[in-house]
Amino acid sequence: MKKLIASAVGTVLALGGLGVATAAPASAATQEVQTSCSTVYVSFQEYPAGTTVSIVIDGNTVEDATLEDGWFSSWYEVDWSTPHEWSVVVDAPDGAEGDFSDGGTTTPCDTDPYRNADASASCGEVTANVSSYPEGSRVLFSLDGETVADDPVDGNYWNVWPLDWTVAHTWSVTLDAEDDALDLSWEGVTEPCDSDPNLRVEVFAYCDQLSVNVSGYPAGTAVVVSVAGQTVGEGSTDEGGYFWESYVLDGTTTHDWTVVLDAADDVFDRVESGTSVECWTEPETVHPETPAVLTACEATPDDVPLPADTESISYARTPEGIVATAAPGYLFPSLQELEEWRLVVDGQVVVENQVLLDWNSVVRPRCDLDVVSVTPVCVDGVPSVDVVVTPPPGAGDDSLEMEWVGPNGGYDDVVYGGGGFGQPFESRQPWPAWISNEDGTVSPHHTPDWRLDDVDLAFGASVWVDGWTYSRYYRAVWEDAPTADPCADDPGPHFSVDARERRLAGNIYLAVRVLNEDDTAAEITVTTHFGTRTFRDVAPGASAYQSFAVRASEFQGVPVAVSFATDVEGQVVTRERVVTAWVGG
Figure 1: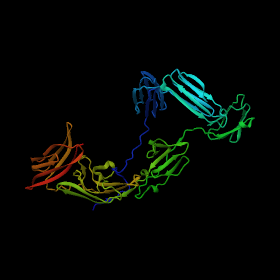
Figure 2: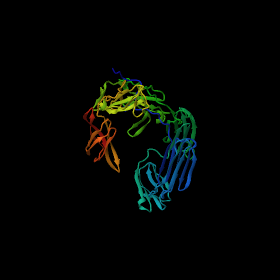
Figure 3: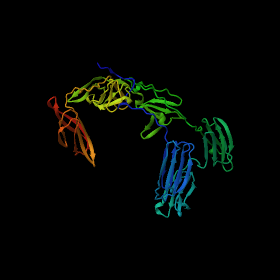
Figure 4: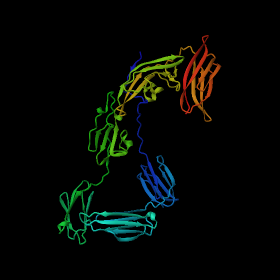
């Protein structure tokens, strides 16, 4: 009686339904080169120290540098109106990867890419800004129907016109160039300000610095600056209405600050307050905790214990998997170091400081597969093996994996692919070619020196659960698989058929070779969609060969029927066999 071992644990074959984990590669050097009509930009990252960078534009070396920290980034301006030849060469130290070279020619722009103009208004002023306009252009500013300014533009121009902030104004700015195609205009109506926009209190509170800048207030206006309720500075505006002072903070934390202005006229009194921003510090790299892989047959994502939250990382369970979120001041390492964790993407946007562990990385149930029978058979001289396996719940009709394996049962121990992946659960499979050795071992024909004292049949099937959330893998090993040729005592006739596509001078042919493996002469007939050929008196050990011209535009399976007749024990016996050849396309 054969022994059937259901292998839910132990060594797992690298069959079609299993993902094979590989070591993540080290961080690789990256290169970026971008060109426009006016600039050449280059950036190199994660290069080893000692890497040299050479950049040439129009035959002139504009950069000849040696990297010390592995990073380089720079851009170079060129005349936008003409083409420029450029080249970049990066030479990594001996033994290091990352050598890189690129080059080309920039394409000129039709117009100056730096040309720009804009005008805007607030309740207290109108501003105009012009860049890279032709000489001879003019800016005209009108306020409430009257022309206030008519200024020449010498390439660049900037101006601010103050307004009476207590009333509304109609305004317009016109940019008049000699080329009418460049003319622009802006217009609008301002609203009155609630307070004098010239009265300004500007506070900068970042890291270890608190600076206070007061302008436009009446001379002698008292200024009191407090941090965390404690007065840190007092003063008053000067004759020009200005006050400026700075104070030192503890940059490792935030601070509440207040600025109080007390003028002789209470209408100018003002209080500003806010909170400082602590100094930026290099985030600490943290690694998310990966739960242990669950292999029990009935395991589901609900059985995966969620890692405990820490000061640096919090975890959440989602339909896709476990999401880890890095707290402020912490970040995750590169994807290469994260192994099975991946980025979280919302639409087309990567979510910052979050990574996802898919359920199929930690939920990998392994179940027993029921193999009903493995039976060697000989049908018309063709050795085969009949396999009957009970399909697991939810398995596809043609999702059975089958491998002939040696005694260790691992990937390197696969002897014959057998049915491979995508076989029905009840089928007749081709018989492997075994060599029987005198010492009782067997060897595959492709490696006669590989001697095996035990051969098993490994079966497997994967069933996806909850869509593509995770898969349940069913596996079994049929020990002591049959290796004795079931047709060893077959009286014959004996022959083999090889039918395959061949191409010659662009034409497709179906090449059929029938080998007489018997010890008497044979009559052989080959029949296909593309013709029939009969061969008489084919000697023992000789072949009948015919090449048929293929008339097929699409790749298709073509049946090849072979009739083989020879003398067997004094009687003429005819055997017929049909094989499929894939041709066309």
